Length: 295
Image (cartoon, rainbow, N blue to C red; front, side, top):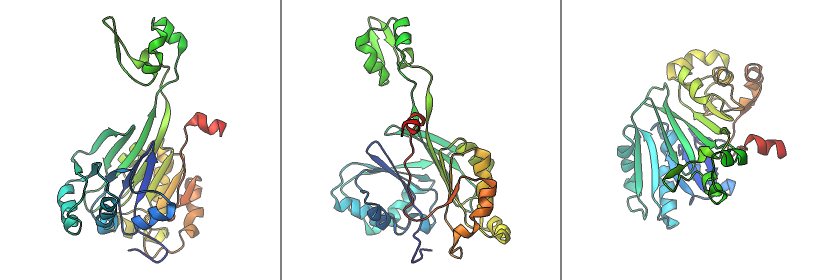
C-alpha cells in the first residue's frame, strides 16, 4: 500500500532520448515530476504483473500523456491478459490521441530490441504470472584501421560500416565486423520483484551493472511468510546478487510494516557488500567501462 513516506512501484530508465517504465504504481506521475523528468519521451511501459500496486497509476499517466498532445505510438509489454487489463483500466481514459500497441509475453524468456537497447523478459515465481526484465545496451568493438585495410575496404566506407551499415560494393558485401574489433562490454540493468529466488533470475541478472530486486522482508523471522506469499527476504536477494556477480544491488518493494530498511542492511552487506536500501527518487547513471576510467 502507498504510505505517506513511500510510493508504489515504478522504475524509469532513460537512454538516447527514449524513456522506458517498468511498472506504474500509484504515485508514479508525482515521482517523475519530482525528478524533473518528462512524460513525453516514454516509448515503452513494461509490466511485471497486474497486481494493483504495480499498475494502478497507468490510467492517470495515459491521460497526462494525452493531454500533452502526444501523437507517437506507445508500446506496452506484459504477461498474458495485457490488452484486456489495460482496456479495462482505460474506461476512465477512453480517448487518447496516440495509438497503444501491445506485446504479450508468452514464453519463459523473450528478447526484443527497441530504440538501440535490448529488453529481455523472464518468468519469475509469484502467486500470479509475473516477469522480470533486463535492459541491455550492447557495445560494438572499436574501429580497427589495420583490419579495414587488410580487408581492402576503401576509407569512404569506414564511417558507415562503423555505424553498423551493410554496404554493397561492386558485388561485394561489406559488413561492420570487417572493420571493428571484438565487442566491448555494454551496460545492463536487471529488475525483478514479487517473486521467490530462482535459478533463472540469477542467470538473467548475471553480470548486471545494477540489479534492482525486491526485499519484501528484512526480518529473519519472516522467511516462512516470504515463502507463503511468494516474496523475497533481504538476505535471499543478497545471495542472488552474489551468485549473479552483479555490480550493485538495490533493494525495493518493502512490506508496509518495514519502516526502517536500513536497520537490516548490515546483514545484507555481509553477504553482498555492494548493496543499498532503495528509496523513492533514487537514481544513478550507468557508464561504459572506458568512460568510468576517464570520469
